[in-house]
Image 1: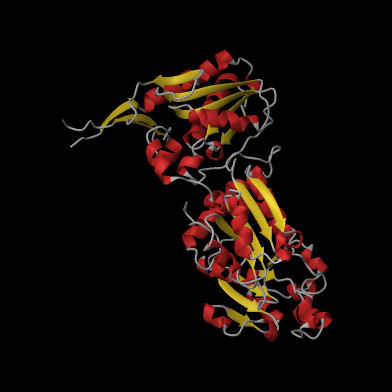
Image 2: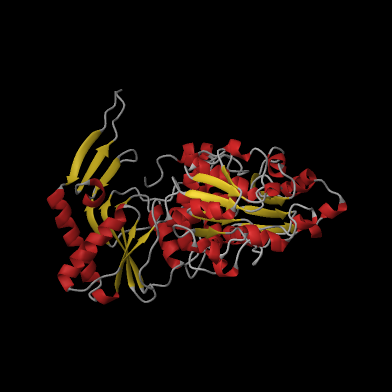
Length: 319
Length: 185
């Protein structure tokens, strides 16, 4: 089983620009399905998909589940807290047991970077990474790209990722995807929350959010995980907002209107001003809508296809 | 060396005449144009539906709504050949319930595309009736499906191709049949 994207979707780092464009172009017609009265097409009928979430997630899990159901797949949700994982079962054993029940795909969220690849190397089923540690969150990267592309061509657009880049898998998937499609990419945040040597990827660094706002066409504002304060990365949330908060006052000084993205869930008044989050240039809810379409496209492109049967069936179809 | 042989089935004038006859045939079967909706199958069916709609407007003065259907996600060969690129959007301008809906496509062959279109339309509503209008019926049905309005019938063998060209996409209106070359004995 290997289609245009290969067996698995583990990250955007190893996809080509053409593969990324294929997902975005495929997502386009999938948007319409969610606007129908009957929001369902039969294409993945009979496929079984397990959503294996070892970390808390609402948005991503529900978005995948809607995408799967709208393509008519059968789905099962496994949350780590209620599963045999708490009894000490290893990741591979859990997955092999699921595979013994004849599944086709696993969508996995896991706290360890590299967990998705680890699993993909050991099971036959297709693995889709729904976030692994600080590594990648490819479908979030893709839906961010789709949302930007809805408003402007990605090539040449200046995108700044603001906030906790160090711990962010969303930032990594965004950086890979944006650079491959020809955007200019920058990051901005406290020095303690920017990875060392990130410039080597071809990314600019801004120390002050005002500079980032003056430069960028698009801001992707990351969630500041509240635990970071206890761990000593930042002195306080108020201090963070004062220096790095994306506020109306700061945006008003920008030479042009900026498109505002946020992967959610938001901490209003920490990384983003409520008036910005709900303002005219926020596309945060468009991101959520696009998330379902992008995930439908990914599931569709990774599913099915049997080359031997295709050979046998030649000549039988319309065109 | 087997060589393919290309035959012209409809030239520009015959193409126009055929479409006109098809429009009249649709009207004969559905005299009330206000209840009609034409649904073209991506790709060339969409252009043909647009042509038929403007011919119907000329004949009756009524604007017949037209939509587009991409049946890729309803195909019965996904398990076999896997995902294909989607070729275009699905867009239905009006509620189908109670309408006389006409599926418009360029070539009718196995009937599997029409089967998929019927399944997809059922997810959008319940038309009073669904008709099928095709520019070319080339035979070779694999399902019990027949068209209500046919522009031109041409018997073909499995390896032959029927190629429809429309001005909007191809710069000219024509239908050609490419007969597969038979291998030399």
